[in-house]
Length: 551
Image (cartoon, rainbow, N blue to C red):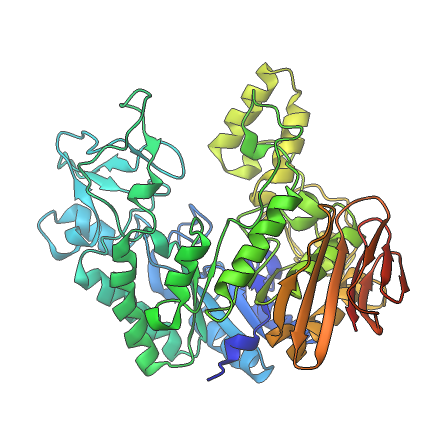
């Protein structure tokens, strides 16, 4: 039976950066509500909100201190109820970010766990060890050890996969599983339509006495992802959670963040028989080359080029393996990566072609706010706005390797996630209509392509995305079969077919003119980007150009 999310086109909103309605420089719920007409005109039918719960903002809301209240910077519960109601009236579903692997250390559960070592909530978290010694050598995703000494002085340490202010919940405790189910029910009961389940693949951990093998100094923490990612208990613990929620909310959309999951795990997580997720988001879509990378400095903060041959293999593997199982999630960017215009496309034509390439495939598009305007990363002139110690280290190391501080900051600004969270470009007024106050995330930007300016230009990126979204909603591109054609490394060509309808999406990935011969003569150009010529079966594409054609 078809569900609403089988035809979803999702727009990701980073609430703090979308629209400020009260002049404090921070986006809020009322600001989102004011922009519903824009979302309607764009054509999307679902919105995913990054975390809005009460939070100390150590990790921009992913450190939750109260799951049952809205952070006062972002709004009130009454404003949240109004947003849900008005989105629904506009035909737009709402998906909330749901953080269930960890909480803030300011959450009442964790405060009680520290204050009462023999109390109920101590076992809501993972405590182990003695004399402040680390139980193992596992490393945190945020650097250092996963273990932090208990500040109440018991000699034990608590486990945190992310920042030390974000202790992991103990999902081995059935009470934790029921408590998180209660949170989900609370929001679904208020009218939320879906949950984007953050970091769910990490809720199970291996034997905490086991060090991860390393040839380095065993006293130094090492990433031990096989010990805390995608373990079997993830499925056994989440299955009852998902089944019970669906029993009362059968139309709920459960979208899991499965960052490191391969395609076969994605099948396990999304197979209808598994009763877990409806779809998952992978971080494995974008293989890069080592071309131009300096091994003397951190590679993750250096701009890297997409390895297009490997990208094609990755895409077709996910497309074919998930066919008949679940809908792949299609995206070019999100809050955890540099913007597609900065990272990959670099020109409006290339950005439009890449959007066509990705979103007309089988699956559910997620469009990151401002992507439809061609927004780029901000540029920071100091390390402070990154709020990330690894950037400080990168700049210092780069200077020792002969780079200037300015060059190092340029590289970090082009690759880091924080500059991708800049304020939405609404108009050409001060602060681009986002706020009357200096934005919370302020950096240099040369962009002038605001939503207001683009809305009156039929050739703008915004206009292109509106047309693309309309095309995606046709049955051929929602439900048609997918087949990637064998072409050169610099082109990406696939067929969508549904009954007697056939279309080809033809993309030039290079800056050189290219010629492609289709299996059948083109009948109509459905959507285009850049320069092209169509002569029956022969397609001539200019630099980075792209076409969707019916035959």
